Length: 597
Image 1: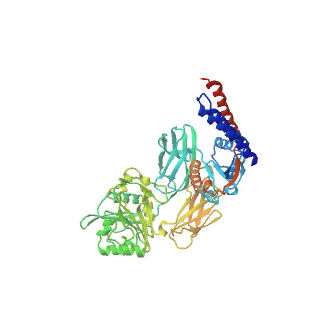
Image 2: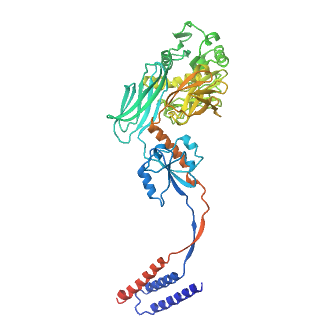
Image 3: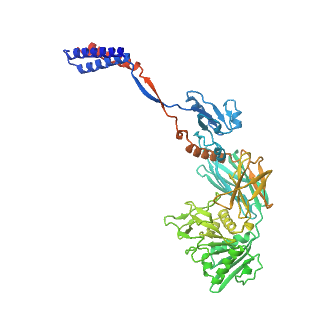
């Protein structure tokens, strides 16, 4: 400390002496510049001998680890490694990547095995099931570029004999080349379409001529090059022999097209339409009912389903209305009612399906069938209604703003489906038969008793892959705890807490192809497991999306960092040496070249 004081005093005296000389200088040019330069020189000289210290915060950063998944870009990984001070360890959850000696990756089952490091994931990432096993481990995600190929696909997995198989999808074209999408069976193309680069969506259809299970192929070609070749398995089943009554208060296209659609499926149909006061037209298809019939308990007990509209029901006498109400509640008759401008007011189902006017700002209705990827063609919104959800009901069709357009509910032993879509025949006129089929199949199944509609099985994801977990989803109204057996595995189902008719259980399929599931009552259903390489682009896009969402909510920066520590640091003396030399240089140059001017 004494030495520092001596240096400070000596440099101060030196500056005062130099300043006095400059002040007494005859030539006043650059006087103040020389005084300032003298001050800088003396201060720098003092700081060369007196250490200048300060306190700084230190935050310890975690070490880095790399996890490679399928689809990673090697150049991106190499650039990241070069940017690190030390080469980080590389891990992978893929057997194929671990077997590549050039990458030097260590195999792990999941990122939760890596501790004490900031994890950087490259490639397509992980599925929802894999992410669920990571115990909320934080990570940073480096997604690849946009994935080329199929980005969306949907088809009716079960087709009623005589109906069309409808395959819809989108293709993401990065190369901007024209491609051909073809649907084939046993090597024979049944439908195809050419897609321009700016035309991603496509629809293919065919009418299967077989019954049972079979597998179509969806192929994407660029010239003679096959870009994708994926299986499209379907099951063609015989139509159920339903018995349906159609009641209409006047002839219209909606009932006309619906009657044609029902009869094409081999259903027993009785259609009664009022054509004038006290005059009716009765059409019978596959039925032995008398042409001139009246509604009675004995007649309705012979049918499974009544399809009508609100105006027709409201126009019946009180006795007939009470009869229909009793047959639905006590005997389990299914009923489908289409709303009109009155909504559903004044009838026994009014409290179950309260209606609201559709927003005036909406020009069209764009709807989708719930629990599927099926989007319905748009309809004019003018004058339409939507349904306010009520506890105990289940929406079958919603619009894109999640307003309910078709709802279903239990009424005693029976079911009621209430629809606000009254002009669906335009889909059939516009050759959008696939959507028309899907809509009315959903409506009818929603109104049938469980013993008629049967158990509805599905899978999640929609494209289950061999050696990856799949959820078997069951919808049933049967009492008790359902179980099933698929292959050698028993499936124990868990009930959805909010939907009492929905159950699901997880299985690990070990072989690709058709899988049989035997329900507790002995009935058999079929589902399909895809080989590992099938629908790769769709699965890759799903993994990228899932991993992005996970990384966003599990970012390492969101974790609490350790409290920063403090350390004493010393300013490098070289900076003061530079200032001293600069000040001295100015004084010398000024005296040598400028003072004489």
